[in-house]
Amino acid sequence: MSAVPVTRGSREGSGRREGGVLVYLAALLVVIITLGPVLYAVLGGFRSNAQLAADPAGLPDPWLLDSYRRVVTEGAFWTYALNSVAVAVITTVVTVVLGLMAAYPLARYQFRWREPLFMVFVVGLLFPATVAIIPLFILVTRDLSLGNTWWGVALPQAAFALPMTIVILRPFLMAIPRELEEAATVDGASRLQFFWRILLPLSAPGAITVGVLAFVGSWNAYLLPLLLLRGDMKTLPLGVADFSSQYSSDTAGVFAFTTLAMIPALIFFLAMQKRIVSGLQGAVKG
Amino acid sequence: MTVLPVAPRATTDPSAGRASRPAGARGRDWRMALEIVGFTAPALLLFAVFVVWPILRAVQFSVYRWKGFGPLVDFVGLQNYVSVLTDDVFTGAVGHNLLIVVLSILVQLPLGLAIALLLNRRMRGQGVLRTIIFVPYVLSEVIAGVVWFQLLQPGRGVVETLLGTVGLEGPFQGFLGTPELAMPTLIVVLTWKYVGLAVLLFLAGLQGVPAELSEAAQIDGATWWQTQWRVTIPLLGPTIRMWAFLSMIGSLQLFDMVWILTGGGPANATTTMATFLVNEGTKRQNYGIAAAASVVLFVIALVMALLYQRFVLRRDTDDADVVRGVR
Image: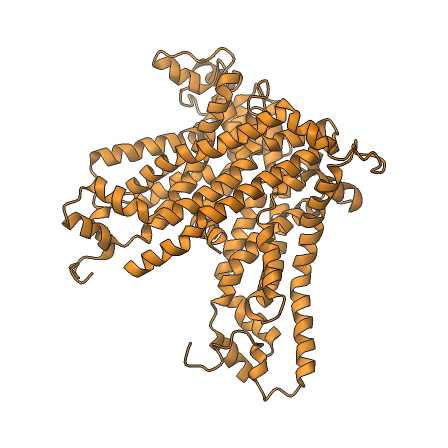
Protein backbone atom coordinates (compact mmCIF):
# COMPACT_ATOMS: atom_id res chain seq x y z
CA MET A 1 0.00 0.00 0.00
CA SER A 2 2.85 2.35 0.78
CA ALA A 3 3.97 1.98 -2.83
CA VAL A 4 0.99 4.01 -4.02
CA PRO A 5 2.01 7.63 -4.63
CA VAL A 6 0.42 9.75 -1.95
CA THR A 7 -0.26 12.61 -4.33
CA ARG A 8 -2.97 10.72 -6.22
CA GLY A 9 -6.41 10.95 -4.73
CA SER A 10 -8.02 7.56 -4.33
CA ARG A 11 -10.91 8.46 -6.66
CA GLU A 12 -8.58 9.23 -9.51
CA GLY A 13 -7.31 5.67 -9.80
CA SER A 14 -6.76 4.15 -13.20
CA GLY A 15 -10.00 2.18 -12.79
CA ARG A 16 -11.86 5.46 -13.11
CA ARG A 17 -10.00 7.11 -15.96
CA GLU A 18 -11.58 9.59 -18.33
CA GLY A 19 -13.84 7.93 -20.91
CA GLY A 20 -13.32 8.18 -24.66
CA VAL A 21 -15.81 8.90 -27.44
CA LEU A 22 -17.11 5.32 -27.39
CA VAL A 23 -17.92 5.62 -23.72
CA TYR A 24 -19.96 8.76 -24.35
CA LEU A 25 -21.77 7.07 -27.24
CA ALA A 26 -22.63 4.08 -25.06
CA ALA A 27 -23.86 6.44 -22.34
CA LEU A 28 -26.01 8.28 -24.88
CA LEU A 29 -27.55 4.97 -25.99
CA VAL A 30 -28.37 4.10 -22.37
CA VAL A 31 -30.00 7.50 -21.87
CA ILE A 32 -32.12 7.18 -25.02
CA ILE A 33 -33.39 3.71 -24.14
CA THR A 34 -34.02 4.65 -20.51
CA LEU A 35 -35.75 7.98 -21.04
CA GLY A 36 -37.29 7.28 -24.47
CA PRO A 37 -40.57 5.74 -23.29
CA VAL A 38 -41.01 8.35 -20.53
CA LEU A 39 -40.34 11.29 -22.86
CA TYR A 40 -42.58 9.75 -25.51
CA ALA A 41 -45.44 9.70 -23.00
CA VAL A 42 -44.80 13.32 -21.95
CA LEU A 43 -44.67 14.50 -25.58
CA GLY A 44 -47.59 12.27 -26.58
CA GLY A 45 -49.76 14.22 -24.14
CA PHE A 46 -49.08 17.36 -26.21
CA ARG A 47 -50.25 15.70 -29.44
CA SER A 48 -53.70 14.87 -30.76
CA ASN A 49 -54.85 11.33 -31.45
CA ALA A 50 -54.87 12.21 -35.16
CA GLN A 51 -51.22 13.24 -34.94
CA LEU A 52 -50.35 10.07 -33.04
CA ALA A 53 -52.13 7.92 -35.61
CA ALA A 54 -50.64 9.68 -38.66
CA ASP A 55 -47.06 9.45 -37.44
CA PRO A 56 -46.53 7.56 -34.17
CA ALA A 57 -42.85 8.52 -34.09
CA GLY A 58 -43.34 12.25 -34.73
CA LEU A 59 -43.07 15.29 -32.50
CA PRO A 60 -46.05 17.47 -31.43
CA ASP A 61 -47.03 19.69 -34.39
CA PRO A 62 -48.66 21.91 -33.32
CA TRP A 63 -48.24 21.55 -29.53
CA LEU A 64 -51.67 21.03 -27.97
CA LEU A 65 -52.63 21.50 -24.33
CA ASP A 66 -56.10 19.96 -24.68
CA SER A 67 -55.33 16.54 -23.24
CA TYR A 68 -53.51 17.91 -20.21
CA ARG A 69 -56.24 20.52 -19.66
CA ARG A 70 -58.94 17.85 -19.81
CA VAL A 71 -57.14 15.65 -17.26
CA VAL A 72 -56.75 18.45 -14.69
CA THR A 73 -60.22 19.98 -15.16
CA GLU A 74 -62.46 16.98 -15.83
CA GLY A 75 -62.56 13.58 -14.25
CA ALA A 76 -61.21 12.40 -10.95
CA PHE A 77 -57.48 13.11 -11.30
CA TRP A 78 -57.29 15.36 -8.23
CA THR A 79 -59.44 13.01 -6.17
CA TYR A 80 -57.09 10.12 -6.98
CA ALA A 81 -54.05 12.30 -6.23
CA LEU A 82 -55.49 13.29 -2.84
CA ASN A 83 -56.19 9.63 -2.00
CA SER A 84 -52.66 8.64 -3.01
CA VAL A 85 -51.14 11.37 -0.83
CA ALA A 86 -53.38 10.54 2.14
CA VAL A 87 -52.75 6.79 2.03
CA ALA A 88 -48.99 7.30 1.55
CA VAL A 89 -48.75 9.83 4.40
CA ILE A 90 -50.71 7.63 6.84
CA THR A 91 -48.63 4.59 5.84
CA THR A 92 -45.38 6.52 6.30
CA VAL A 93 -46.28 8.06 9.66
CA VAL A 94 -47.55 4.78 11.13
CA THR A 95 -44.51 2.87 9.82
CA VAL A 96 -41.92 5.36 11.08
CA VAL A 97 -43.52 5.99 14.50
CA LEU A 98 -44.20 2.33 15.31
CA GLY A 99 -40.89 1.28 13.78
CA LEU A 100 -38.84 3.74 15.85
CA MET A 101 -40.70 2.79 19.01
CA ALA A 102 -40.16 -0.94 18.51
CA ALA A 103 -36.54 -0.54 17.39
CA TYR A 104 -35.63 1.45 20.53
CA PRO A 105 -35.85 -1.33 23.17
CA LEU A 106 -34.68 -3.88 20.58
CA ALA A 107 -31.54 -1.81 20.09
CA ARG A 108 -30.76 -0.39 23.52
CA TYR A 109 -32.42 -2.43 26.27
CA GLN A 110 -30.97 -5.66 27.60
CA PHE A 111 -33.63 -8.28 28.21
CA ARG A 112 -34.14 -11.96 27.81
CA TRP A 113 -36.55 -11.96 24.88
CA ARG A 114 -34.75 -9.32 22.86
CA GLU A 115 -33.25 -11.47 20.11
CA PRO A 116 -36.30 -13.76 19.70
CA LEU A 117 -38.49 -10.64 19.45
CA PHE A 118 -36.21 -9.16 16.81
CA MET A 119 -36.29 -12.46 14.90
CA VAL A 120 -40.08 -12.15 14.63
CA PHE A 121 -39.57 -9.08 12.45
CA VAL A 122 -36.60 -10.56 10.55
CA VAL A 123 -38.71 -13.57 9.58
CA GLY A 124 -41.47 -11.11 8.66
CA LEU A 125 -39.20 -9.88 5.87
CA LEU A 126 -39.90 -13.15 4.10
CA PHE A 127 -43.70 -12.74 4.15
CA PRO A 128 -44.75 -11.18 0.87
CA ALA A 129 -48.03 -9.25 1.02
CA THR A 130 -49.21 -11.20 -2.03
CA VAL A 131 -49.47 -14.40 0.03
CA ALA A 132 -51.90 -12.85 2.49
CA ILE A 133 -53.85 -10.78 0.00
CA ILE A 134 -57.15 -12.72 -0.04
CA PRO A 135 -57.47 -13.08 3.78
CA LEU A 136 -56.38 -9.43 4.10
CA PHE A 137 -59.18 -8.41 1.77
CA ILE A 138 -61.70 -10.35 3.89
CA LEU A 139 -60.25 -9.05 7.19
CA VAL A 140 -60.29 -5.40 6.13
CA THR A 141 -63.66 -5.34 4.38
CA ARG A 142 -65.72 -7.66 6.59
CA ASP A 143 -64.13 -7.98 10.04
CA LEU A 144 -62.86 -4.40 10.41
CA SER A 145 -65.30 -2.60 8.06
CA LEU A 146 -62.39 -0.58 6.71
CA GLY A 147 -62.96 -1.49 3.06
CA ASN A 148 -62.79 1.49 0.71
CA THR A 149 -61.08 3.74 3.29
CA TRP A 150 -57.60 5.30 3.50
CA TRP A 151 -56.84 3.49 6.79
CA GLY A 152 -57.92 0.14 5.39
CA VAL A 153 -55.10 0.31 2.84
CA ALA A 154 -52.57 2.21 4.96
CA LEU A 155 -52.58 -0.07 8.02
CA PRO A 156 -51.78 -3.34 6.17
CA GLN A 157 -49.16 -1.50 4.10
CA ALA A 158 -47.55 -0.17 7.28
CA ALA A 159 -47.67 -3.64 8.84
CA PHE A 160 -45.84 -5.16 5.87
CA ALA A 161 -43.33 -2.27 5.86
CA LEU A 162 -42.51 -2.71 9.58
CA PRO A 163 -40.04 -5.63 9.31
CA MET A 164 -37.79 -3.78 6.87
CA THR A 165 -38.11 -0.57 8.92
CA ILE A 166 -37.07 -2.25 12.16
CA VAL A 167 -34.26 -4.21 10.49
CA ILE A 168 -32.85 -0.94 9.09
CA LEU A 169 -33.41 1.17 12.23
CA ARG A 170 -32.05 -1.19 14.87
CA PRO A 171 -28.36 -1.10 13.88
CA PHE A 172 -28.82 2.63 13.39
CA LEU A 173 -30.00 3.12 16.97
CA MET A 174 -27.35 0.70 18.27
CA ALA A 175 -24.63 2.82 16.69
CA ILE A 176 -25.51 5.85 18.82
CA PRO A 177 -22.70 5.93 21.44
CA ARG A 178 -23.53 4.65 24.89
CA GLU A 179 -21.61 7.60 26.35
CA LEU A 180 -24.48 9.84 25.29
CA GLU A 181 -26.89 7.72 27.28
CA GLU A 182 -24.53 7.76 30.26
CA ALA A 183 -24.22 11.53 30.07
CA ALA A 184 -27.98 11.95 29.85
CA THR A 185 -28.45 9.69 32.87
CA VAL A 186 -25.87 11.63 34.87
CA ASP A 187 -27.84 14.76 34.06
CA GLY A 188 -30.91 13.08 35.50
CA ALA A 189 -32.75 12.06 32.31
CA SER A 190 -34.88 8.93 32.34
CA ARG A 191 -34.76 6.39 29.50
CA LEU A 192 -37.94 7.90 28.09
CA GLN A 193 -36.47 11.40 28.16
CA PHE A 194 -33.32 10.04 26.52
CA PHE A 195 -35.51 8.53 23.79
CA TRP A 196 -37.39 11.77 23.16
CA ARG A 197 -34.66 14.36 23.58
CA ILE A 198 -31.57 12.62 22.23
CA LEU A 199 -32.30 9.41 20.35
CA LEU A 200 -35.12 10.69 18.16
CA PRO A 201 -33.25 13.76 16.84
CA LEU A 202 -30.10 11.66 16.27
CA SER A 203 -32.00 8.96 14.40
CA ALA A 204 -33.56 11.43 11.96
CA PRO A 205 -31.43 10.30 8.97
CA GLY A 206 -32.43 6.67 9.51
CA ALA A 207 -36.05 7.64 10.06
CA ILE A 208 -36.06 9.62 6.81
CA THR A 209 -34.63 6.66 4.90
CA VAL A 210 -37.28 4.22 6.14
CA GLY A 211 -39.94 6.92 5.72
CA VAL A 212 -39.01 7.43 2.07
CA LEU A 213 -39.07 3.67 1.44
CA ALA A 214 -42.51 3.38 3.05
CA PHE A 215 -43.81 6.37 1.07
CA VAL A 216 -42.49 5.07 -2.26
CA GLY A 217 -43.92 1.63 -1.56
CA SER A 218 -47.33 3.03 -0.75
CA TRP A 219 -47.36 5.55 -3.60
CA ASN A 220 -46.59 2.84 -6.17
CA ALA A 221 -48.78 0.13 -4.63
CA TYR A 222 -51.36 -1.50 -6.86
CA LEU A 223 -52.52 -4.93 -5.68
CA LEU A 224 -53.94 -4.04 -2.24
CA PRO A 225 -55.66 -0.81 -3.39
CA LEU A 226 -57.00 -2.75 -6.39
CA LEU A 227 -58.84 -5.14 -4.08
CA LEU A 228 -59.90 -2.59 -1.44
CA LEU A 229 -60.64 0.74 -3.12
CA ARG A 230 -63.47 1.65 -5.45
CA GLY A 231 -64.97 4.75 -7.03
CA ASP A 232 -63.88 8.02 -5.47
CA MET A 233 -61.48 6.32 -3.08
CA LYS A 234 -59.11 5.08 -5.79
CA THR A 235 -55.42 6.00 -5.81
CA LEU A 236 -53.43 7.25 -8.81
CA PRO A 237 -52.10 3.85 -9.98
CA LEU A 238 -55.70 2.56 -10.06
CA GLY A 239 -56.78 5.74 -11.84
CA VAL A 240 -54.05 5.38 -14.45
CA ALA A 241 -54.92 1.73 -15.08
CA ASP A 242 -58.65 2.55 -15.32
CA PHE A 243 -58.13 5.48 -17.63
CA SER A 244 -55.90 3.38 -19.83
CA SER A 245 -58.47 0.60 -20.21
CA GLN A 246 -61.58 2.82 -20.43
CA TYR A 247 -60.20 5.30 -22.95
CA SER A 248 -57.73 3.00 -24.68
CA SER A 249 -58.42 4.66 -28.04
CA ASP A 250 -57.65 8.12 -26.56
CA THR A 251 -53.90 7.53 -26.60
CA ALA A 252 -53.08 11.22 -26.12
CA GLY A 253 -55.36 11.35 -23.08
CA VAL A 254 -53.72 8.24 -21.60
CA PHE A 255 -50.28 9.79 -22.08
CA ALA A 256 -51.39 13.08 -20.49
CA PHE A 257 -52.97 11.34 -17.49
CA THR A 258 -49.95 9.07 -17.02
CA THR A 259 -47.50 11.97 -17.30
CA LEU A 260 -49.31 14.07 -14.72
CA ALA A 261 -49.50 11.08 -12.40
CA MET A 262 -45.78 10.34 -12.61
CA ILE A 263 -43.94 13.67 -12.83
CA PRO A 264 -44.30 15.09 -9.26
CA ALA A 265 -43.48 11.75 -7.66
CA LEU A 266 -40.61 11.24 -10.08
CA ILE A 267 -38.98 14.52 -9.04
CA PHE A 268 -39.43 13.78 -5.34
CA PHE A 269 -38.16 10.20 -5.60
CA LEU A 270 -35.13 11.16 -7.69
CA ALA A 271 -34.24 13.79 -5.08
CA MET A 272 -34.40 10.98 -2.50
CA GLN A 273 -32.43 8.54 -4.68
CA LYS A 274 -29.51 8.14 -2.24
CA ARG A 275 -31.86 7.33 0.64
CA ILE A 276 -33.70 4.70 -1.39
CA VAL A 277 -30.48 2.95 -2.44
CA SER A 278 -28.92 3.03 1.04
CA GLY A 279 -32.18 1.79 2.52
CA LEU A 280 -32.35 -1.18 0.15
CA GLN A 281 -28.72 -2.03 0.92
CA GLY A 282 -29.36 -1.82 4.65
CA ALA A 283 -32.43 -4.02 4.39
CA VAL A 284 -30.43 -6.95 3.10
CA LYS A 285 -27.21 -6.47 5.05
CA GLY A 286 -29.07 -5.54 8.28
CA MET B 1 -15.71 3.57 23.82
CA THR B 2 -13.45 1.15 25.67
CA VAL B 3 -12.40 3.81 28.16
CA LEU B 4 -15.70 3.62 29.96
CA PRO B 5 -16.04 0.58 32.20
CA VAL B 6 -19.77 0.35 31.46
CA ALA B 7 -19.52 -0.23 27.73
CA PRO B 8 -18.30 -3.86 27.58
CA ARG B 9 -20.94 -5.13 29.98
CA ALA B 10 -23.21 -6.24 27.20
CA THR B 11 -25.35 -8.81 28.94
CA THR B 12 -26.60 -6.77 31.87
CA ASP B 13 -29.20 -4.04 32.11
CA PRO B 14 -27.45 -0.74 31.42
CA SER B 15 -29.26 0.92 34.33
CA ALA B 16 -28.14 -1.78 36.79
CA GLY B 17 -24.74 -0.18 37.25
CA ARG B 18 -26.16 3.07 38.48
CA ALA B 19 -26.26 2.59 42.23
CA SER B 20 -27.33 6.17 42.78
CA ARG B 21 -30.85 5.55 41.39
CA PRO B 22 -33.29 5.90 44.31
CA ALA B 23 -35.80 3.21 43.32
CA GLY B 24 -35.24 -0.39 44.33
CA ALA B 25 -34.04 -2.99 41.80
CA ARG B 26 -37.44 -4.64 41.65
CA GLY B 27 -39.16 -1.33 40.84
CA ARG B 28 -36.65 -0.63 38.08
CA ASP B 29 -37.19 -4.05 36.53
CA TRP B 30 -40.92 -3.53 36.47
CA ARG B 31 -40.53 -0.10 34.99
CA MET B 32 -38.26 -1.39 32.26
CA ALA B 33 -40.57 -4.30 31.45
CA LEU B 34 -43.41 -1.83 31.17
CA GLU B 35 -41.38 0.37 28.82
CA ILE B 36 -40.42 -2.60 26.64
CA VAL B 37 -44.05 -3.66 26.33
CA GLY B 38 -45.22 -0.09 25.75
CA PHE B 39 -42.69 0.53 23.00
CA THR B 40 -43.03 -2.76 21.15
CA ALA B 41 -46.73 -3.55 21.60
CA PRO B 42 -48.12 -1.22 18.91
CA ALA B 43 -45.78 -2.60 16.24
CA LEU B 44 -46.36 -6.20 17.34
CA LEU B 45 -50.12 -5.69 17.38
CA LEU B 46 -50.18 -4.21 13.87
CA PHE B 47 -47.88 -6.97 12.65
CA ALA B 48 -49.99 -9.69 14.27
CA VAL B 49 -53.31 -8.37 12.92
CA PHE B 50 -52.30 -7.53 9.35
CA VAL B 51 -49.43 -9.94 8.63
CA VAL B 52 -49.48 -13.03 10.86
CA TRP B 53 -53.25 -13.45 11.13
CA PRO B 54 -53.97 -13.18 7.36
CA ILE B 55 -51.19 -15.66 6.60
CA LEU B 56 -52.57 -18.14 9.14
CA ARG B 57 -56.02 -17.61 7.65
CA ALA B 58 -54.61 -18.37 4.19
CA VAL B 59 -53.36 -21.70 5.53
CA GLN B 60 -56.80 -22.33 7.05
CA PHE B 61 -58.72 -21.38 3.90
CA SER B 62 -56.50 -23.68 1.87
CA VAL B 63 -58.03 -26.83 3.41
CA TYR B 64 -61.65 -25.80 2.84
CA ARG B 65 -63.84 -25.44 -0.19
CA TRP B 66 -65.19 -21.94 0.32
CA LYS B 67 -66.84 -19.44 -2.03
CA GLY B 68 -66.44 -16.45 0.28
CA PHE B 69 -69.76 -16.50 2.15
CA GLY B 70 -71.18 -18.56 5.01
CA PRO B 71 -69.11 -20.44 7.59
CA LEU B 72 -66.08 -22.58 6.78
CA VAL B 73 -67.63 -26.04 6.88
CA ASP B 74 -66.66 -27.86 3.70
CA PHE B 75 -63.33 -29.35 4.86
CA VAL B 76 -61.52 -30.95 1.93
CA GLY B 77 -58.09 -31.69 3.40
CA LEU B 78 -55.30 -31.35 0.88
CA GLN B 79 -57.61 -31.48 -2.10
CA ASN B 80 -57.12 -27.80 -3.00
CA TYR B 81 -53.37 -28.40 -3.09
CA VAL B 82 -53.87 -31.39 -5.39
CA SER B 83 -56.08 -29.29 -7.69
CA VAL B 84 -53.60 -26.43 -7.77
CA LEU B 85 -50.51 -28.57 -8.30
CA THR B 86 -52.17 -30.58 -11.08
CA ASP B 87 -53.57 -27.46 -12.76
CA ASP B 88 -51.57 -26.77 -15.92
CA VAL B 89 -52.22 -23.05 -15.57
CA PHE B 90 -50.71 -22.98 -12.07
CA THR B 91 -47.72 -25.20 -12.83
CA GLY B 92 -47.21 -23.03 -15.90
CA ALA B 93 -47.31 -19.97 -13.63
CA VAL B 94 -44.65 -21.47 -11.33
CA GLY B 95 -42.53 -22.10 -14.43
CA HIS B 96 -43.03 -18.51 -15.58
CA ASN B 97 -41.99 -17.15 -12.17
CA LEU B 98 -38.85 -19.30 -12.14
CA LEU B 99 -38.06 -18.28 -15.73
CA ILE B 100 -38.43 -14.62 -14.74
CA VAL B 101 -36.18 -15.16 -11.69
CA VAL B 102 -33.44 -16.72 -13.83
CA LEU B 103 -33.72 -14.42 -16.86
CA SER B 104 -33.90 -11.25 -14.74
CA ILE B 105 -30.56 -12.15 -13.19
CA LEU B 106 -28.95 -13.46 -16.38
CA VAL B 107 -29.91 -10.37 -18.39
CA GLN B 108 -29.65 -7.62 -15.79
CA LEU B 109 -26.37 -8.76 -14.23
CA PRO B 110 -24.10 -8.30 -17.28
CA LEU B 111 -26.07 -5.27 -18.47
CA GLY B 112 -26.05 -3.66 -15.03
CA LEU B 113 -22.34 -4.37 -14.55
CA ALA B 114 -21.50 -2.93 -17.96
CA ILE B 115 -23.45 0.26 -17.31
CA ALA B 116 -22.08 0.59 -13.76
CA LEU B 117 -18.47 0.20 -14.94
CA LEU B 118 -19.21 2.70 -17.71
CA LEU B 119 -20.63 5.25 -15.29
CA ASN B 120 -17.81 4.64 -12.82
CA ARG B 121 -15.31 6.28 -15.18
CA ARG B 122 -14.65 9.95 -14.74
CA MET B 123 -16.87 11.62 -17.30
CA ARG B 124 -18.91 14.74 -17.72
CA GLY B 125 -22.54 14.58 -16.65
CA GLN B 126 -21.99 11.51 -14.48
CA GLY B 127 -24.38 12.67 -11.77
CA VAL B 128 -27.15 13.34 -14.28
CA LEU B 129 -26.59 9.93 -15.86
CA ARG B 130 -26.96 8.21 -12.50
CA THR B 131 -30.24 9.99 -11.92
CA ILE B 132 -31.54 9.16 -15.40
CA ILE B 133 -30.75 5.46 -15.04
CA PHE B 134 -32.85 5.43 -11.84
CA VAL B 135 -35.97 6.93 -13.47
CA PRO B 136 -37.65 3.66 -14.56
CA TYR B 137 -37.07 2.11 -11.15
CA VAL B 138 -38.93 4.81 -9.20
CA LEU B 139 -41.90 4.78 -11.57
CA SER B 140 -44.68 2.52 -10.38
CA GLU B 141 -45.04 -0.72 -12.30
CA VAL B 142 -48.54 0.39 -13.25
CA ILE B 143 -47.36 3.62 -14.88
CA ALA B 144 -44.43 1.93 -16.62
CA GLY B 145 -46.82 -0.82 -17.73
CA VAL B 146 -49.44 1.57 -19.12
CA VAL B 147 -46.80 3.50 -21.08
CA TRP B 148 -45.27 0.32 -22.54
CA PHE B 149 -48.74 -1.02 -23.32
CA GLN B 150 -49.32 2.06 -25.50
CA LEU B 151 -45.87 1.83 -27.11
CA LEU B 152 -46.51 -1.82 -27.98
CA GLN B 153 -50.05 -1.40 -29.37
CA PRO B 154 -50.36 -3.60 -32.46
CA GLY B 155 -50.49 -1.60 -35.69
CA ARG B 156 -50.30 1.89 -34.16
CA GLY B 157 -47.67 1.70 -31.41
CA VAL B 158 -44.39 3.53 -31.87
CA VAL B 159 -42.31 0.34 -31.42
CA GLU B 160 -43.77 -1.15 -34.58
CA THR B 161 -43.34 2.18 -36.40
CA LEU B 162 -39.65 2.28 -35.46
CA LEU B 163 -39.23 -1.36 -36.53
CA GLY B 164 -40.92 -0.39 -39.80
CA THR B 165 -38.27 2.24 -40.56
CA VAL B 166 -35.61 -0.50 -40.58
CA GLY B 167 -37.82 -2.76 -42.70
CA LEU B 168 -39.10 -5.08 -39.98
CA GLU B 169 -42.75 -5.89 -39.47
CA GLY B 170 -44.39 -6.36 -36.10
CA PRO B 171 -46.36 -9.55 -35.36
CA PHE B 172 -49.97 -9.46 -36.51
CA GLN B 173 -51.46 -9.62 -33.00
CA GLY B 174 -48.81 -7.37 -31.49
CA PHE B 175 -45.94 -8.28 -29.20
CA LEU B 176 -48.19 -8.74 -26.17
CA GLY B 177 -50.93 -10.56 -28.08
CA THR B 178 -48.77 -13.32 -29.56
CA PRO B 179 -48.31 -16.21 -27.09
CA GLU B 180 -44.70 -16.95 -28.08
CA LEU B 181 -43.67 -13.28 -27.89
CA ALA B 182 -45.53 -12.14 -24.77
CA MET B 183 -43.04 -13.55 -22.24
CA PRO B 184 -39.90 -12.27 -24.02
CA THR B 185 -41.56 -8.86 -24.33
CA LEU B 186 -42.41 -8.90 -20.61
CA ILE B 187 -38.76 -9.71 -19.83
CA VAL B 188 -37.60 -6.77 -21.97
CA VAL B 189 -39.95 -4.36 -20.17
CA LEU B 190 -38.92 -5.73 -16.75
CA THR B 191 -35.25 -5.31 -17.70
CA TRP B 192 -35.91 -1.69 -18.71
CA LYS B 193 -37.72 -1.10 -15.42
CA TYR B 194 -35.27 -2.77 -13.04
CA VAL B 195 -31.75 -2.59 -14.49
CA GLY B 196 -31.36 0.89 -12.94
CA LEU B 197 -31.55 -0.56 -9.43
CA ALA B 198 -28.76 -3.01 -10.27
CA VAL B 199 -26.65 -0.17 -11.68
CA LEU B 200 -27.06 2.06 -8.62
CA LEU B 201 -26.36 -0.78 -6.16
CA PHE B 202 -23.28 -1.83 -8.17
CA LEU B 203 -22.07 1.79 -8.32
CA ALA B 204 -22.43 2.04 -4.54
CA GLY B 205 -20.46 -1.21 -4.26
CA LEU B 206 -17.76 0.14 -6.58
CA GLN B 207 -17.22 3.03 -4.17
CA GLY B 208 -16.04 0.44 -1.67
CA VAL B 209 -13.46 -1.08 -4.03
CA PRO B 210 -10.13 0.53 -3.13
CA ALA B 211 -8.59 2.34 -6.12
CA GLU B 212 -5.15 1.20 -4.95
CA LEU B 213 -6.00 -2.34 -6.03
CA SER B 214 -6.73 -1.51 -9.65
CA GLU B 215 -3.74 0.82 -9.65
CA ALA B 216 -1.55 -2.01 -8.44
CA ALA B 217 -2.97 -4.28 -11.16
CA GLN B 218 -2.30 -1.60 -13.75
CA ILE B 219 1.28 -1.18 -12.55
CA ASP B 220 1.69 -4.92 -12.99
CA GLY B 221 0.70 -4.44 -16.65
CA ALA B 222 -2.98 -5.42 -16.60
CA THR B 223 -5.25 -3.82 -19.20
CA TRP B 224 -8.43 -1.96 -18.19
CA TRP B 225 -10.55 -5.02 -19.08
CA GLN B 226 -8.30 -7.39 -17.14
CA THR B 227 -8.43 -5.07 -14.14
CA GLN B 228 -12.23 -4.98 -14.17
CA TRP B 229 -12.60 -8.71 -14.73
CA ARG B 230 -9.97 -9.93 -12.28
CA VAL B 231 -10.03 -7.25 -9.56
CA THR B 232 -13.09 -5.03 -9.54
CA ILE B 233 -15.90 -7.47 -10.36
CA PRO B 234 -14.76 -10.16 -7.86
CA LEU B 235 -14.71 -7.49 -5.14
CA LEU B 236 -18.29 -6.59 -6.08
CA GLY B 237 -19.35 -10.12 -5.12
CA PRO B 238 -21.25 -9.23 -1.93
CA THR B 239 -23.12 -6.40 -3.69
CA ILE B 240 -24.04 -8.65 -6.61
CA ARG B 241 -25.29 -11.43 -4.35
CA MET B 242 -27.34 -8.95 -2.33
CA TRP B 243 -28.90 -7.49 -5.49
CA ALA B 244 -29.67 -10.96 -6.87
CA PHE B 245 -31.55 -11.73 -3.64
CA LEU B 246 -33.72 -8.60 -3.97
CA SER B 247 -34.32 -9.39 -7.64
CA MET B 248 -35.30 -13.01 -6.89
CA ILE B 249 -37.81 -12.07 -4.17
CA GLY B 250 -39.36 -9.44 -6.48
CA SER B 251 -39.62 -11.84 -9.43
CA LEU B 252 -41.43 -14.47 -7.35
CA GLN B 253 -44.13 -11.97 -6.35
CA LEU B 254 -44.50 -10.31 -9.74
CA PHE B 255 -48.06 -9.09 -10.26
CA ASP B 256 -48.59 -5.43 -11.24
CA MET B 257 -46.66 -5.38 -14.52
CA VAL B 258 -48.22 -8.62 -15.77
CA TRP B 259 -51.74 -7.55 -14.76
CA ILE B 260 -51.36 -4.29 -16.70
CA LEU B 261 -49.56 -5.60 -19.79
CA THR B 262 -51.27 -8.92 -20.47
CA GLY B 263 -53.50 -9.87 -17.53
CA GLY B 264 -51.67 -13.20 -17.63
CA GLY B 265 -52.56 -13.92 -21.24
CA PRO B 266 -52.54 -14.54 -24.12
CA ALA B 267 -53.58 -18.16 -23.51
CA ASN B 268 -51.96 -18.02 -20.02
CA ALA B 269 -48.56 -17.43 -21.61
CA THR B 270 -47.55 -14.92 -18.92
CA THR B 271 -49.57 -16.05 -15.87
CA THR B 272 -47.61 -15.79 -12.61
CA MET B 273 -48.44 -17.32 -9.24
CA ALA B 274 -49.71 -13.93 -8.03
CA THR B 275 -51.98 -13.28 -11.03
CA PHE B 276 -53.27 -16.85 -10.72
CA LEU B 277 -54.28 -16.48 -7.09
CA VAL B 278 -55.82 -13.03 -7.53
CA ASN B 279 -57.78 -14.33 -10.50
CA GLU B 280 -59.04 -17.38 -8.59
CA GLY B 281 -59.80 -15.36 -5.46
CA THR B 282 -61.41 -12.17 -6.69
CA LYS B 283 -62.84 -13.12 -10.08
CA ARG B 284 -63.93 -16.72 -9.56
CA GLN B 285 -64.46 -16.63 -5.76
CA ASN B 286 -62.49 -19.87 -5.35
CA TYR B 287 -60.99 -18.80 -2.02
CA GLY B 288 -59.79 -22.29 -1.11
CA ILE B 289 -57.91 -22.68 -4.39
CA ALA B 290 -56.48 -19.15 -4.15
CA ALA B 291 -55.33 -19.81 -0.58
CA ALA B 292 -53.65 -23.08 -1.56
CA ALA B 293 -51.87 -21.25 -4.39
CA SER B 294 -50.71 -18.52 -2.01
CA VAL B 295 -49.35 -21.09 0.46
CA VAL B 296 -47.44 -22.76 -2.38
CA LEU B 297 -46.07 -19.33 -3.40
CA PHE B 298 -45.05 -18.69 0.21
CA VAL B 299 -43.29 -22.05 0.56
CA ILE B 300 -41.42 -21.59 -2.74
CA ALA B 301 -40.32 -18.06 -1.78
CA LEU B 302 -39.31 -19.16 1.72
CA VAL B 303 -37.34 -22.21 0.57
CA MET B 304 -35.52 -20.22 -2.11
CA ALA B 305 -34.72 -17.40 0.33
CA LEU B 306 -33.42 -19.81 2.97
CA LEU B 307 -31.35 -21.78 0.45
CA TYR B 308 -29.94 -18.52 -0.87
CA GLN B 309 -29.07 -17.30 2.63
CA ARG B 310 -27.53 -20.67 3.48
CA PHE B 311 -25.44 -21.24 0.37
CA VAL B 312 -24.83 -17.83 -1.20
CA LEU B 313 -25.12 -14.95 1.26
CA ARG B 314 -23.26 -16.85 4.00
CA ARG B 315 -20.02 -16.45 2.07
CA ASP B 316 -20.22 -12.70 2.49
CA THR B 317 -18.97 -12.65 6.06
CA ASP B 318 -15.68 -14.00 4.73
CA ASP B 319 -15.68 -11.68 1.72
CA ALA B 320 -16.27 -8.63 3.88
CA ASP B 321 -13.24 -9.62 5.95
CA VAL B 322 -11.14 -9.87 2.81
CA VAL B 323 -12.05 -6.35 1.74
CA ARG B 324 -11.48 -5.00 5.23
CA GLY B 325 -8.13 -6.76 5.43
CA VAL B 326 -7.02 -5.19 2.17
CA ARG B 327 -7.93 -1.77 3.36
